Image (tube, rainbow, N blue to C red; front, side, top):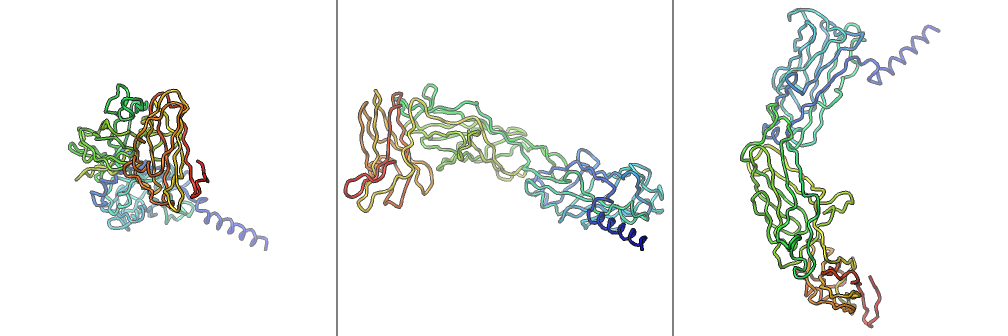
Amino acid sequence: MKKFNVVAASAVALSAALASGSALANGSLAVATANYNAAAVAAGGGIITVPWNAGTPSAIYTVATGTSLEVNSRFTVTLPAGFSFASQPSITVSTPNSLAVTAGAIGSNTATFTIGNNGNAPGNAAVPAGATLTLNTVSVQGATALETAGASLGITVQSTNNALVTNNDVMPVPGNNPAFTSDTGVKAGFTGGGSPTLIDLAAPSLGTLFQPADTTTADIGMVTLTSSGSLNAAGVPVVFSTGDSATLTLSGFFNGIASATAGGVTGTISGNTITFTDVPFSGTSFGAEIHLIAGGTALLQQNPPGFPVPVPAQGGFTASFAPGPKVTDFLGGQTTNPADQIAYTNGQVIQVTNFLTGDDAGYTSLLRVNNAGTVPAELFALVQPYTGGPQLVGNLGTTLAAGTGTVFLETQIEAQVPGFTLTNSGQRATLTIIGAGAGVTNVAASDLLVNPGGVVVNVN
């Protein structure tokens, strides 16, 4: 009875070890990842060459101490789901031996090798502890998962059918790294001068030109694309083709910008974006300096740090890039210039309200502005409708003398800001006032809501 209990306890322990999937797993699989260019894999229809044992990518199984892979045991390689072998796989063993594929292989997700059987010289030798089994270059089909950047997939191997059960890998052995990954095919950068471009709010430019020297042109940095070094479908690192091109889309506030160029291509301005179509490569890399050209008549808008989402530690501009026509070298992506920004100088930005409404039912929205300074101020209104779209800007049409104040009706603001309208109180906008010139530090503004009886019922 006692003996039975001991055996039972051992069986329980063995069952627990088996269930854990690790206690009796013997070999280890060291993987140096094969990283693929997703665009090139797509162009190749998901058929790839895996250059194992011919360069950086590798997959090497090491037989554990105290074990061996016995003659006539099985060694199975399993590819990621959806993958299958398109050529006959093979393995190089570090000790004199030979393996024969006896199951799976071409057209299958797995390949099973028989260890050292008599029909395959140099004969019937076991693979001893410490020996390695290295997967060799092979063609694989169905690798469509690698057509998307960011894929990460593994393989497994497993030793089975050993006469001594402790020589078996109880569970398939995964690699220490993914066997396959994929990227966009490019390394992207967006470098700038490291200092903000300034919009001069002082007369006579009144926010229509850039400093220094009130110029029409602002250089906001260079977008660069270089090959990431990832593999193409043939298993060779990709080098960009001469004559390739990229389309760039720059996000920002571009009121007052008359035109823009990147790499010699003139962009198309639409709302908060500028698109540069098919900017050419130069040799095997890409570099395009982006220039904004002011019209010299309309108020330019700030592009503060972190556009389009204010993040204190991040500023500058974001450029999206995409391959031009017939390009199969890379996929699209984004790159950010964290340093450059466009900011106002020689003036003041005054946040007024985020609740400017249209007039109806006898209620009236008013803008009150007061200049407590010692010099006149030129005033601009900058509004952002709740409905979205680009910010709208206009000159309020008056110079506010020192020591004076004035009131604008909501309808007067509409008349001075092209494209802006609030037809009723259900339509709203954020309102900012820009005071131009060096003496506007004492300009203040507020939004008032007046009821039909002429009583102010809300002040912002």
